[in-house]
Image (cartoon, rainbow, N blue to C red; front, side):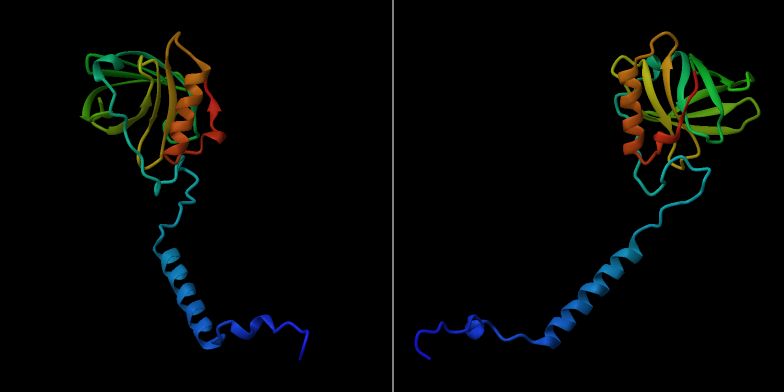
Length: 183
């Protein structure tokens, strides 16, 4: 054939349908194996955060600067209906959304991780996930996701810091878009 171009596939490597099929099977098995190893997200409606997402407490937390009166700005519908609290020299007094007060003692378990022991000897761990440099706004929660709050010192409310606290909580697995404004 003169004047014709040779076919483009003349120099292409031969196709091996069996090799292609085996590669497809191996890739599907690998994807299935990876999917089986991934932790399943929790659908527990009581949880405010996905417990498979790592959570951390902030290292710049200073316990002495945490003393004072705090009010809850944003909260999920978790098991702890907190409206505010006051910390003074290791003493803890909280106010529920229904106006009931509860007293206890607070002690550090680690940097930014506090344990509250109530008068009836029950305990609760409170993680300071984020706090602004002036210790006026904080994001509070715990690893199991049964509660979460954005709190500010009484009279020190700043919308930009509240939004920053929400973003940090979201990064740590919380779903703050459904949370209510408390104050």
